[in-house]
Image (cartoon, rainbow, N blue to C red):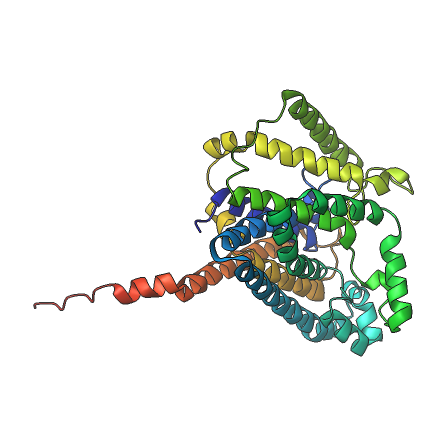
Length: 386
């Protein structure tokens, strides 16, 4: 399948924004949520779901549902291997460096593991214990394992029932249902991992973005998304106004809409995908879809972003390695740290991400059967007559 450069650019942009947000520098809070009360995580999750829906629906239509299911499982296993490697790196190298250097940022991040290493190790491998920064890949793995069931049902019976269930789960996620169900699980199994250590992302809420992305990707694979009707002018106007208000509000108020304990903050909550936050995201998606073709004709293609987006999984893992190492040696960002240190951290980290992407794509190209066959079929160069 030919790659869609615009989607790779968007994924590359999301990866850079996540890296800038997580790297402990003075630029983190400045560039986190740069488009309003929406973070790069929402964009990355939905783009990943869209790509999965498009690629694996095409495979299902071409090779059959069993082939699609096997491809999903193989991809989920690959992501799990990456997650397990990151956990072991965190529990060994990063934990050792953090303790030796007495970095409170890391000892706080690893508090549960340091107090109960065996439960932390097994809980992490079972995708139950999810330390901060390492809680996106477990979400991704669970969604990938569920995706073939969702796509198969959607392709055969339609998506109405899927969306009804997905919306119901999102509504439930705005309450304490997830914590209640987990407490029941703990009582039944006597599992030792506290609920607060299971990860920041509310799975029952974020599944809605994944289902939406899968559906859009499936429609794209079937050629139905390109033939959609234009959005009404009134809807575009509302989206422009809402997105603009959220953008201004974010930079006036900061990362949190209202300081202090307010119900408004819950409505914008990232981890539960609060309703106002979700509307902010939908407004941006609609605007991108509406103006996308015109933007593609006018904006230049940025090769660096395309390269990063095309190798998103290795780049994501590399960003975690860089961030964890930065926390180990430099700790959290402080006003006393010189700006050049932050600039050098940022520049070195971005260079590592790009090199990781380039090497990954080179390896993928060399291991591609079509590329190997082409190289084997190429005629040998003629010997020199001299």
